[in-house]
Length: 206
Length: 206
Image 1 (tube, rainbow over the protein chains, first blue to last red):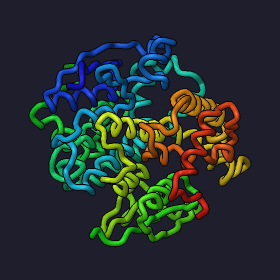
Image 2: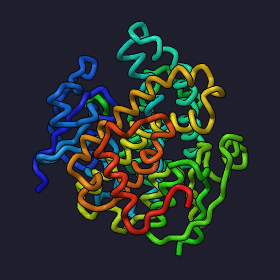
Image 3: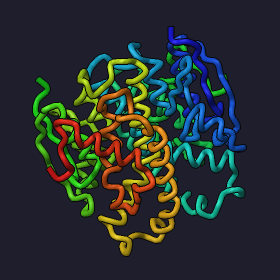
Image 4: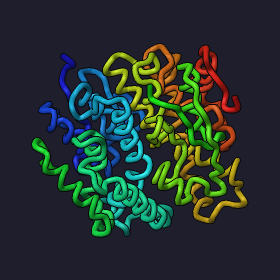
């Protein structure tokens, strides 16, 4: 109906994993096309012209159209499904946590993972290295916000898995790769287990 | 039906203006409660407990419930209205530009405006001052992405005003306060005029 779905991705990216996890829960098959972001493969003239002028993955290709931004792609896939709450407030609250994820969580928790686990500390620029303490503190602050919200809850919104959980799970479950210790966040740890236990779950390496 | 709507805000913030502009287009009245973020009024124990554990404005209070994140609040207000496209792809594409705004635009274009126009360059920390060149470059890159998309278009998605335009207008129209010159971006400048010409528009100072 909508043509083939192709995920343009770097598979180790949590932003790309979000889309695969959403598709898995929905039973929707995705073709996958891998780019090596460490070699600049998403900044070529062809990629910028044909896939995403912002030079980033993931991009969900829907027939002949291209949808950048991981959380927007998840919303397209899940449109009309139980992964988006039916209640008006809950639906907006789901988006609230997805915007929180992109603004307060991903730039800190995901960036430190990428710098420390993929680029390597020795290869960082002086400017990147100087940002580590501030990003560490902001990442801990994001995890603390999640911890307070999750105390006494099974999922972020209502009592069922939604895109808010999928968006925040992607980088939270590998936060240790960025040097974040989740031991001080027991509610976050319990929630990670709740998300992974939902039937249909796939891991980052599936 | 949903109780009173109270916007907890710092009125000079573009993120807060987005919500007022959305409400104005919808003809929905908002009560407004001002906080001085320069005096830490959104980091008090009361604010963190009762309004937003993330210590940020804006927050849209809907009866007794609180909805942080500017773009989520706009989505709640505009739910079911013409500010959100009816087409599935266009609706996701609107969210794509709203996530772009929070990830690639706001942290650069809005942060430099806040630092240079509100905090003042002399009052910045060394760490903040060191980040200016990278945020300047990333802000110019975001404006360039907008310029390429807007060439030949009146609005970001389809041919009508949507929340994507409102979200990106908020800080783009005051980008000069952060030292961004819009002369190299004629399509962005024309689009700013298109947005301001839509009946129902209000300015940041209304």
